[in-house]
Length: 182
Ligand SMILES: Cc1cc2nc3c(=O)[nH]c(=O)nc-3n(C[C@H](O)[C@H](O)[C@H](O)COP(=O)(O)O)c2cc1C
Image (cartoon, rainbow, N blue to C red; front, side, top):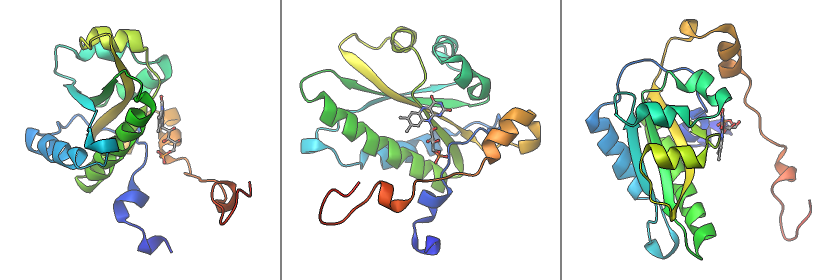
């Protein structure tokens, strides 16, 4: 059945294997184009996405806002996309909209052979300070990105984590028909 699923959905994975080759401006423009076509409640497109490369003036403070375990692998990423939304009473819908936009960005990256890894492990206060996000906004998630690296350059721990078998729940744990049957 897997051969009937869109390739990018199957092949995307949270990568730990990045090279220092830059993601180009043209590639970023394609990623932006793909991201903007995500659906959103009332077509509000509430996402604000800030790209920070590892050559940016914001890079160091942004990197320092990551959790220690994320720093272990994210140091080899060349680009981060920070997804934010403005706080208001529609916040939970906005978070959902950002999820769709983030998935568009990840799948389009996969098409361009750009590795991605979504992150929820960071200090919101520090991220906001690092890239000057106004207080009324929330950071929803950060996407780490980079071109594919050479696995042999990873230490044993990261290599093992990168190659770990990806698993999903048995279907009946998450899906049912007609009624709630969990
Ligand atoms: C909202 C969100 C937050 C995540 N936060 C982290 C994180 O802080 N660090 C990390 O290494 N992976 C993080 N992940 C990646 C998940 O661990 C990963 O998606 C999951 O294990 C499934 O693996 P896959 O993406 O390779 O299919 C996050 C994923 C999502 C969607």
